[in-house]
Image 1 (spheres, rainbow over the protein chains, first blue to last red):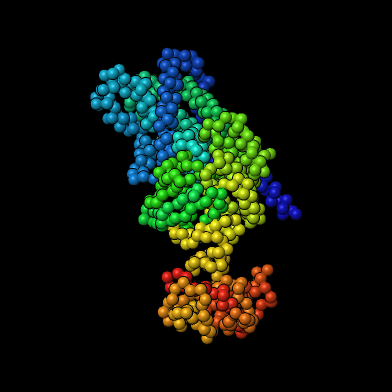
Image 2: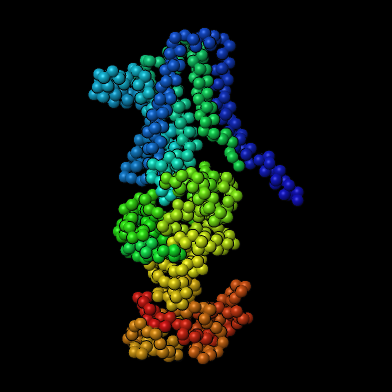
Length: 271
Length: 356
């Protein structure tokens, strides 16, 4: 009896999670520390005043326009790619997979430089686009190109894992019940991979919001929050970047929370 | 023929999964496709349903060649071993799923869903989600979902194999009843010969990608056309025999010369044949009328509760399995195994039937 009780009690207190919780806690502490020390400086800076300057307002506006567009492009093209990668094997698949991961491996600044060699003002693509009034560098389009290049892998990789976890027979059953491949994707694959796709969208959006290296190379102007932060830092040091950094945290958290709410993503493991 | 499979072959890379498979299903028939794991049953189901394109051969449904049509254009109901219920839909929505693909008006659709949930006795679970169902209930919902669009053929691919034994037996009866009530032409795929024999009007026995036999269960059980069918459908025990006289055929086993009544071949004298016997047709004791005796020693006795499995090693060195209900002899005891002459089935070296 006492043995059984001890075991049940143990289950309840979950001592087996003590070690992982401790290890995770240490990492969390390390994450939290810079935030705390950084935010501790808030008191000495006029946040709202600085955020209402035209430079800051423009940066916020540009980020709020470009990051969602980049995320939408990455999702619209990335989710179908993820589905193909999860469902088919084909010659050269490893190459495609490597290509998907490449933007994560390459430092963003190098990614930006690579983009410049492809769509820069003096390249055939860049000059043709500029000629019809759509400059691919130094423009919001340039920002979107840079953000998409760097952030899209997140939604592709996460969605692919989501699709991969769905038993293919669920799709076969749908086909045999009279639905074509597209309706089956819409009715079965998409809803079942929804959690993973939304998680991927969140990661991609957060990455796009924070994107600096590639954006700086492709479109230093118009400024997004991260590029404006860099400009402010050069001019005024750490205290000068506090307001925009706070705005970046706030906006990203807001969107992520909204996405999690819309996606009804559980924050705890469901039993 | 409702379903006609014509010389279907399929290859995965260099591996041959199906080899010239042909058979047909008459309207309203329940046919069991039976064979050991890995014999190509699932590949065959996938080819009939249209989820793989066979390397060669044709599939016809109600006379129409559907080999090149996608799954959604075929009227084939499909139930897999694993659950394929959609976890994000209720039981009712799952059953309605195959109906919403067509243009049926909502009221009629609701009525059909109710009818099929009634059929599987789950009307009260309509609003439940698949996650809330028991294993057996889940199976029944899958049946209802597959049947609701009234398919030409229902394919059940090992539908009971993931369930525990008591549930399996109960659901087997359910499937038989539902099939009787709906009259749907059904191909029931299983590796379990007992399940196949208890359910099916006819059996298609498969081995290594080919059809080994087609026929009524009792017929195939009693006169299996090949040693594989003999050993797969029920238990089989074997001995070797030598032809002494070709026409009329006489064989010798041990010191016994046995005339064979039904002969399909006349192998020359000296040919070695394989004799197949059902363990339950053998007994331990002196042979009676129509039987001959083989003496040997008891090697093993296994107590299976309702019977004993006794292995006897004969003087010629073959081991015979005897099912015994009475008290078994002791190990190492010298005994005589009584073999009814009529129970003996003879195969030649190429596995063709010689006679019985």
